[in-house]
Amino acid sequence: MMATEKEPQKRVVIYPTDIRKITGRSERGSRALLEKVRAFFGKEKNAMVTVEEFSTYSGIDQKTIYSFIT
Image 1 (cartoon, rainbow, N blue to C red):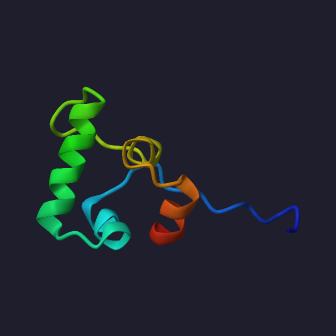
Image 2 (image 1 turned 90 degrees about the vertical axis):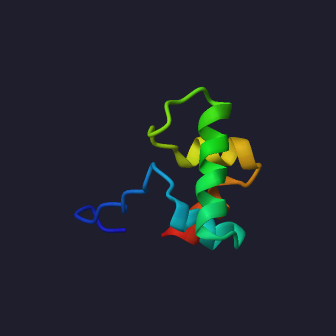
């Protein structure tokens, strides 16, 4: 990598569309899973869920998650 090139930024937040790609669940099922992750971490209803939190909850490696969402 050249000194002027920057490494691409990785997203921090995961969305229902990403969960659909990773798990094959429906949109509704993906949203329900995000709600379960929020409840697990004690987050508010509309709080963002990070890739790290989803990884911890689901047991799916972050590297695998990023391969689906980038």
